[in-house]
Length: 72
Image (cartoon, rainbow, N blue to C red; front, side, top):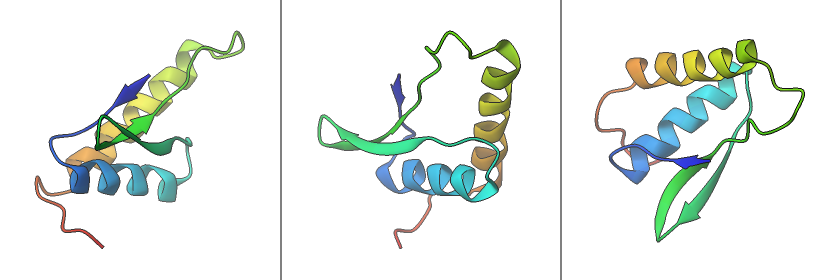
């Protein structure tokens, strides 16, 4: 699964915050010329709790970053 936020800067900022928090790991990629976050939950060992943990990590990161995240 790929997803992104309204801008490349915000996508990168949220991904960076999630990675730095260390609860879950996702990677970044480029799709159709824009930054995106790659998320895989298709492993047979992935349980609902792990999906919830990933969603919570992104909710937290997205709520703590301003709508416009300056590029680093």
